[in-house]
Image (cartoon, rainbow, N blue to C red):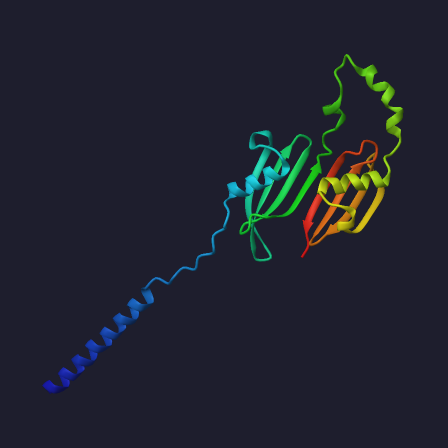
Length: 203
């Protein structure tokens, strides 16, 4: 009888010991996978965008830097405003290279309001009005876009220039491609000023 009790006691102790080991194994913390941190910081991305646009940080407004993922790649989106234009940049968080950028004219504000001469000088602008009725040539619009992009016509593909009209504005739409990037420009047909431009990465 004493032998049977000893065996039963041994079995109970063994079962409890194994249960305790299994519980400890289950309660052990699992290793946490950490994503690879970005090679550049948000401040670095901000500096890359502002340096490319040619403005110091105190010369722009509505400056925002956000982190996002595109096709599995970590990137920073940098948005800001300078004057009548809004700028948007996408910067690769690993390499610090600009993958996309755009400059959009804010049509909610009329451009004459910022360029009007003082009230004492309206007559000085009167003689120049007839000259502004003629549009610049397509060739001129094309050269303006290529010069801004820092490219030559021989370096681009699918170049096209079309005269467009929208909301009373007449402008040239210039589009071309260089390597993995597509460029798009809207150029005022009267003054030759760049109204809007985009550079998009297309792999």
